[in-house]
Image 1: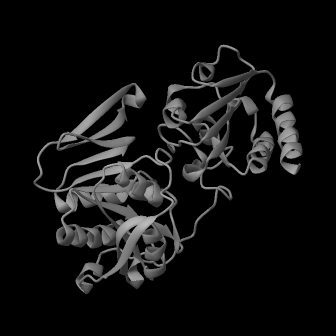
Image 2: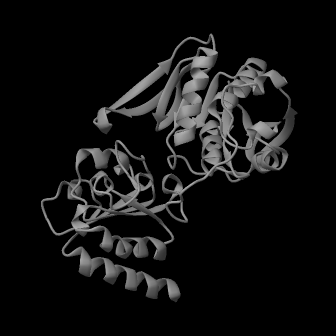
Image 3: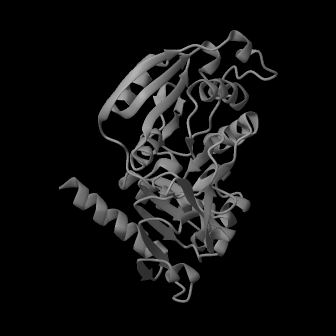
Length: 321
């Protein structure tokens, strides 16, 4: 089996999920290739090769400096046509979903989005993905072998590939590929914090129980002390307390950290869908009957305005030792 993973970069830095895709590919014991697109892709390709990326297909061009799903899809379609992979794996990030969806349309291939595992049943590829807000787990099977099967893999499911053998192959595509209707000239990004929400191992999220935007710094401080990311429920985003970029849930970001601390979040199903696969969930809420406690590994019933500062001070003391 030939497997192509799609590594994505931003500002010349590889998305951490790129290494998770390689680890997922390794589990299938196939022939692994990795595609990396950038204005100068060689150094990034070398990093991928050193961590198990197999045959790393590096495409360099000034138009690839910033993400453009129209251009990226055309380039990847060229690589797919040339190398004929059976499976193509991309990250289920905001950009990854946009790219792989377009790519599936360009190459006329089937696709499964936001999968949580990929495996083999005989000669058939089987992708597992949650549906209907996580209440159903569906298995999507690709039976025929007439072309590639495209998937986007939820981040933080597989560990990052740490090592392995690989080689860098410099690929070129026709300049006509870069003649498009859209062009990205620059990016102006409003950062939601030092740690990317979808890549974070630790997330501390705030909900309506914080009573007002003026109290969010208390939760952000706890996130900072833990070197984690700050998250939010839809309720406080809709209320204008914080930016949409921080929203976790069905209409926000789906996250899968090692530790998720929910402060003042009742646990509406729309929020649970986005974080219920977290490895460890800690809930802080004054309502002992709040639905969040049904999925929490640890629950603290009490006043967040007393508990959060106490946790922050305790972690500060522990981490200072």
